[in-house]
Length: 65
Image (cartoon, rainbow, N blue to C red; front, side, top):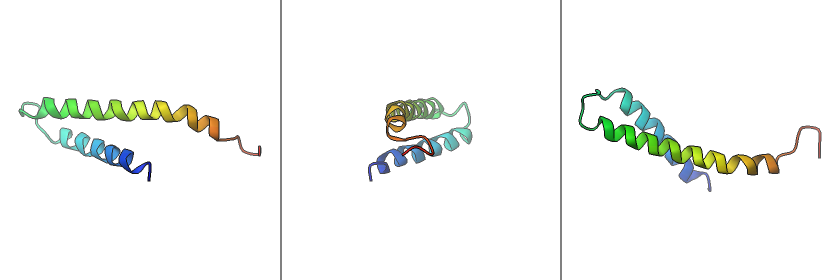
């Protein structure tokens, strides 16, 4: 359940990326879509940075118990 909000942001980021690919560069919403995508990607990157040290601290190498 804890990953559900993050999953939603991940899916929204993918939708923004696809929408940006199909939006002409001269469209008035293009810069806004770029900003939204950048913000979303920065948010996901910060979450990955926060989770990564915890993940390595919890997991053990194969063969060790």
